[in-house]
View (cartoon, rainbow, N blue to C red):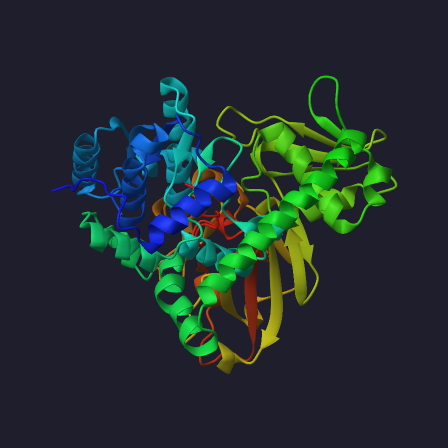
Length: 495
C-alpha cells in the first residue's frame, strides 16, 4: 500500500524542498525530526520527502498524529497514518483530544482549540522524545490564502507575513515555497496514498471559499500567478516584520519595566513620543509579557490601551483579554494580570456605553465597534441573514440615546421569529456561544429593551416591516472576528 520512498527522478517538489532546507537551514544532519501527519496530501508528501533523505541526512523520524474526535471516521485517519509510519520505519505518536469540549472549556472555537491542542501535543512529544525539529506540511498556497484572510481582517505586517519556514520553538515548514499542484504531482508520480478531509470542501468555511472561488478567480481574471505573488508578498512582510521587531528590542529595554508584585509598567511619556507603529508594538509586548501570547488581543484593544498613556490624569482600569487590566497612574501605563491557568478572565467583565445618535462607538472589551446609520426601509428588504454582523432595525424602535452594554442578570428578549421572550442566558446556551464570549457580546439597548444581540439575533420588536416608516442599519465591525461567537475564527494558519 505504501511505496518505498524515492529520491530519483527528482520532481519539482523535491527541488523546492531541498532549496528550502539549504536556504533556511531547517534541518541539520543527524537531527531527530517529528513529522506532523494528518493523513492529507500535504503532510503525506512531507513525510515521504523526509523519509527519502533519512539515510543521506542520518535522520531519525517520528510521526505525530492528533485525533481531534470531530468526525466519525477520524479513527480511520489515525489508523491510516499509523500504517504509513510503520511502513516507513518511523516512530509513532498518537494523541486523542475532544477539541469541541476543549473549546467550550476555554471559550475558543473548535478550530482554535484544535490548533492549541496540536501545538501542545507536538511540543510535549518533542520534549519527551528528544526531537530537535517538528515538521509541518503547510505550502505556498496556504501562505497566499493566509495573507488574503488576514488582509481582510485588517492585520498588520506580522499577520500578513503569516507562517515562517523556521520558528524559534523548532517548528519547520519546508514546503512554503511550493504550490499545492506540485504536492499533488509528487504524490501521483510516487503513487503515495493519502486521505481527504471532507471539511476541506465545505463552502461554509471562509478559507475554503477563498481557496476554491476567490483565488482561482484572481488567477483567471486578474493576474496569472496571483498565488505566487501573494506568497512573495507574505515573505516580504515577514522579513520586514522581523526587522521592525529588532528595532523595538532596545525601546522595550528602555521603556518597559517589571512592577514589584507583578505586572509591567510602560513609560507613558516615552511611549507617547514614539510613532504609532512603535507604540502598538510595545503595548503588544507588554501584553505578551503577562500572558505569553497575543491571542485575543485586537487592534481596538491595543489602540484603547495606548490612548490611556496620553491621559494627563489617572485613568482606567481598562480591561484587556485574559484578565489583563491597563490603567494610567503616576507610574505610567500599568498592565496587571489576574488570569487563571487557562487564560480565563478573572472576575466579571462589565461595560456600558452611551450612543447619543447615528455614528459609531468602540467597545474595546469586545474588540469591536458598532456603527449605526439611517437607511430607507426598502434597503432592508430581503436582507435578513446576509451577514450576521449587519442588522436592519425599524426606525421607530431605535430611540436615542441608546445603550451598548454586555449582559446583565435576568436579561430577556424576544428572538426574531420566536413566539415569546427568552432569557438571554438560555439563548446563549442554546446557540452554543462559549462562556467567555457571552460575557463580551455587545447588546444594543433602547429604553431598557434589547434590540439586537450583536452578531447573533434581532429582537422581534425591531423587525423592519412593510409598515415601517424608517430603518436603521447596524453593523458590528470586528477588529478580530473570532471575538463574536457566530463569526468565523480569525487565527492565522499555524498548526
